[in-house]
Length: 126
Image 1 (cartoon, helix red, strand yellow):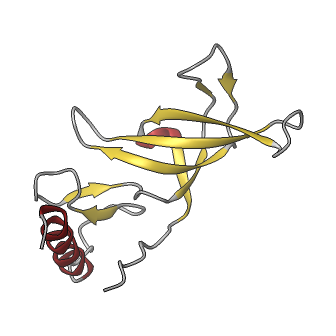
Image 2 (image 1 turned 180 degrees about the vertical axis):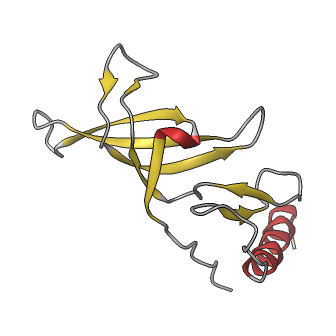
Image 3 (image 1 turned 45 degrees about the horizontal axis):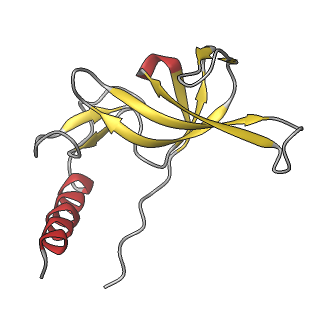
């Protein structure tokens, strides 16, 4: 088993442990997870792959545009240092493009969005 396989096995075991943890002490809308915390459990608002919606307008990180509230996107990364934050790919309607959307990646704080749909991770097939 390679180093990546060993890491995957540790993650799979941790996922099963997390699933059995009590969430009674967690605030509403928060989940318990270990990823990115050096093995410690941490309360996160969103998980990777969750669909989120902006509660406020945010500045684009790559242009001078302002992205309006109400835009939805997908959490692609999550951070716990120096504080909780999320990298989110936003789908911004743009009828001038063939697909109807342009995409921006922005860094968001938990108070800037709500989770619209929690996406359960798919287990790797053995």
